[in-house]
Amino acid sequence: MTPTAEQSRELIEAIATAVSVEALTELRQVARREHLLDLRGGFLELLIAVRLDNLTHARVPGARVS
Image 1 (cartoon, rainbow, N blue to C red):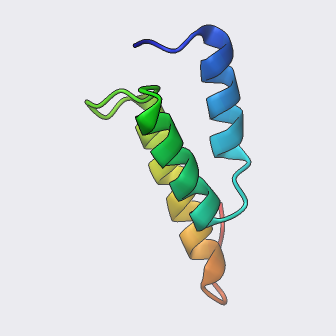
Image 2 (tube, rainbow, N blue to C red):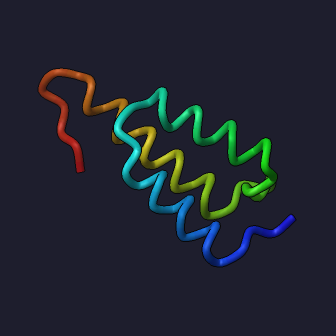
């Protein structure tokens, strides 16, 4: 199922503003369960990976967050 434009915008906003690795992991699970992610590794999966990387580095003392 392809998400609507509104679903895509909401999902992008939720990914970009996730405040923890746990919240992002839960968001990914919900999106997969609702079939909102492209299983071939599309834009949303890439966005999740980048946000996850940023959140992970933010936990390390002295690490820069871009």
